[in-house]
Length: 421
Image (cartoon, rainbow, N blue to C red):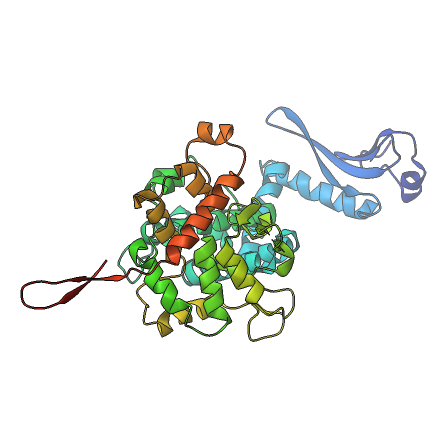
């Protein structure tokens, strides 16, 4: 009588080349694909449904090993259990066990390492590391990544600062970026089989039900600014200061550029003959090239600068630019710790809006600050950068910065009183 199980032999397995199925008995089959590859299949019936599951390739799983697996699954069927579902459950348990050994901090480190080369610069990676280390790590960093849930993500985003306000309310932009970074790390952990289920840091259809819309809760941060009426007297005092940092502050005022754009400026960006400074897109906040017309005073300042390498404002270390604190130190030496370098952009914008002598259109002033026009329709019709009008605007601003209010004498009944004009 023919055997019902163990019909195949190792020789028969090695010689089987015709595509199809070759039965060994007891639900075990050898499958030969049209390409010639061979693998083991276990076929069974559960709840009146025909099912099958792969046991591995022949070059990995031997005939005796395949028979042992088939026997294990037949015993599972005798217990009234579905071998496929049992296998899935065991794999889930294994995944959870692995996840217990993988913390959120470890996943964050692995995610950053995997994506570091694709990011624009090293600063981007350090921003990820610093943000996560400051806000996420103290709360969920040491936890198994599989256990990070919605309430914990909300706890991270809602933690209170020294001002007693939640991170989501007081530093909305930082909190928004943090949420996105946590979401990316948890997605990575899910794909890597370190966690299961939906992403608890997802915004749309999830956290948007628990936290305020960031576009509405975002708080505008106003940098302390010098009143525009005082800019002439300030410039006169600034021009008495020595050092390269004072020159950088002066150019920041004359060009109304951000301090980072000033500090990292290189001589190759300037065309002094054309009185033009072209800041490349990668150095701009809006990631668009920005052309800055240079006024006569700005040109004179640049022409007076010694060239010590490619950087216009080199720092103390060779090849390194001035630090942001170097510019702030200039204001402190002048006893003006009440204002910031960035605030001079606000001084310029207020001058544009309030000075009766200034008749330049709003969009010209916005372009000078490298802002996008808020009205998308208006922006679509004004695709240029209004360089000719901005050239006149920057010269007018420079002329105003050079005017120091003169003292006017008024003679009252009891003597002479000096007033500021």
